[in-house]
Image (cartoon, rainbow, N blue to C red):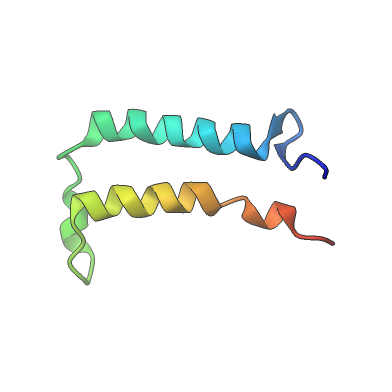
Length: 68
């Protein structure tokens, strides 16, 4: 099985891990300071926002594993 690359020097696993580390940093800085959430048409809790953002980060490069 070949290693999937997210970038030329970073495996998909490394990239995803690094993205999630950045998310943890962002959450520690912006926890409780997301006034734009009230502008979403449906109710979106801050906890749900961070959980959904983590899911997006984990899946955003998944297509790189598809066969051409």
